[in-house]
Length: 97
Length: 97
Length: 97
Length: 97
Image (spheres, rainbow over the protein chains, first blue to last red):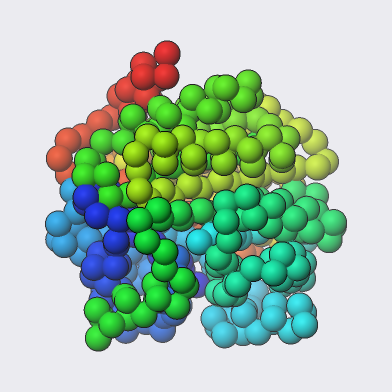
């Protein structure tokens, strides 16, 4: 499970959707299962794929014209069991009911 | 817009859903609009409310028995315009089509 | 232990030191023990103080002219023992020797 | 500039220095210039090196026995100019005097 966010700096505009779209295209291109959240993109991938997706997304924001980019990748790897994104949300949702 | 994640440390178990549920209950109790994502919870709130929700969620994880808790609150405040969570996701999704 | 970072968006400049300085002034004003790192500021404070420092720092970046600000506060609270910032660094440094 | 943090989950102990030391050894092994902060490690590296260091550090925590690991890598790349870690801290420190 990986969580990705990209933030271009010094763009002169408070809107970031063009840059985030450029990054998201790389997530899609990688063919991984993903979910776009309001503040980040979560996707399921092996460690190597997660790193290469982060690299491609970061580079895509630079290619979109940003002169400074802060990219945050959070990798949450669990060895004893694997839960897909929907399971994670469901397990918590049920307990909060 | 605020993004919240809580991570209990030293619990002896790799599963965290009980703790995350305890934190999410506080988000619900605050009456803010929220979305549970696979790796975090996003909610819409004024700055003061966001901080008090984070405090309550952090405390709820401690009250659930965790002896060490790492809570991350990311506040994304935009003054020129306001977008709700769905708008954010839609704007990016449309551009990636 | 709290870690704080502020990122102004849409400023038109890639340099952020003016904004970070505005935020750091609030950390100093709070009278907490702090350490300025290359990518964040770490300080020691009770939970309530940590939240109020984050609020003041976030507001200071807005008051410096940023129309959008992303502030990240990470709180790492440990109940069984307390370690000051220097101890944390030392314990790891010794083990890596 | 990269910021790295590793958090093992479910270890049964609130102390993390053994795991952080394992991760830091990988940063050192890579030969990059680094600074150990109380809550993270900051280092200077090209993008590819930053990613491979994060991978090695993440793997080292797993090899130390953690069954679940959350690794956060924040990459801050600036194209118009380059500032080393000390410059970043100095520029802000001077403005806050």
